[in-house]
Amino acid sequence: MLELPIAASGLSILASLLSIGRSVKDLMATQNLSTDQALDKFKGNASGTNAEVLAMKGSDSAIKSIVIIPGQLLDQLVSEINGCVDRQVEARKKAKNQAGKDKADRAAAVCVCSGLGSIKLHNSGKLPEGTLRDLWKAYGCN
Image (cartoon, rainbow, N blue to C red):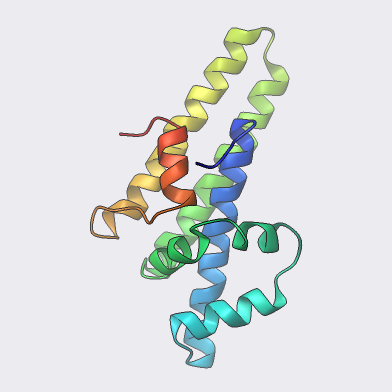
């Protein structure tokens, strides 16, 4: 199972997966590539966080599930997940006590579960093995 030291790490991974999925989908459309070809091409140029995320167990499966989601919806999910991260970080910074931090973490979990639920909705009600399924469990989504 994926180890998540803090909630923002999991949200960042999800945002990265969604962003990578969008980029792979763009490569498929603009260069007339199969999913596997586009993913391999993206991997060849990946660095930093993207390279780290692509090396995680289950990332290929997650990205292949993501590319079936319509482009506009995928863009919206990326935007929402990035917003989750931003709001959680700001709320934790402003929290005056642990209860405030806990509230920020719960709000982030609701946000993550909503994004993951949308992915499930467009993927026959399933999340792929690996990162996305681990995030679903880590945030207590149901």
